[in-house]
Length: 270
Image (cartoon, rainbow, N blue to C red):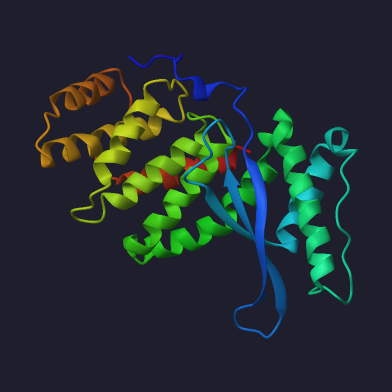
């Protein structure tokens, strides 16, 4: 049986907010046109007694920050009353001083969002953090370019895992999508490591929606265990027990397909 509690301290609602720092800004050109824009590179890390050795990277433009700000202003007006945002300008977008001022404003916005629990758990923030990258990732997965998708998926997981609790839906779905990609690459050396992490995370899950991923996850992990010379009997027994409890599982569907299906279901429920 799955436990609804966990001794893992990182699942606490009081998880320390990460630091979002804009480390660089460069002029980029929109694909298929000559229109230029400034692309800001953010480094996301935890600053504790030992500095975060594996920061996540995010690249966003002014429009992305503006969309985040306006969505939060609309949906959470009371929480956004003290937040100002860098104004649009008609000329001078590539001026170094303006870029510096905007960078400071963007960092301030994210800092405000991350320390407010309501804003931190909001759909607009999750959209800002991953929507653009997921579009590219899904294209790569659709084309079966797993080798190119894997590092992007790992960065996506590390990013979300710094912002949200270890067993939040966004984090677990990102983790399962990463594992689903890795097992599609024959002989992937990292599949077992991420399978171990995924199983550990799911020990504290009781959300009925997320359980839809647990069965295909167990199925995948059992295969990995046997392929790597480990005894997977306990995983197969757990899988069989859940089936007997009436939890449905389409053995013909891959873990990636299960994640896509759950993602679609959750989006439709919003």
